[in-house]
Image (cartoon, rainbow, N blue to C red):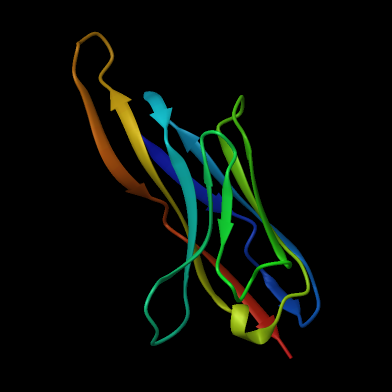
Length: 125
């Protein structure tokens, strides 16, 4: 099976930095893109940043210039570097990826949109 596991969330002061990691594991054939979402209390989940398999990146306007998404394809690990953090960046950050996976010993393959369990980021003013 496939798992996405986020880490790196913490409590930081305004202006601080954090680097979130998303480790993908399991029987993975391909990962088309990696997306970082966040959800603040009582708000809808929003897309923060994404990176495609060819390295194309995209950011929400509110984080452009402060956040950087990157990937280590060999390690199947994906990062979100967050600088100059603001209180409005507070929320649970989720890693998301459309993955083509396979079952070992069979010809079975499937595509599924996987989510991690989330990591809490709290920015205090």
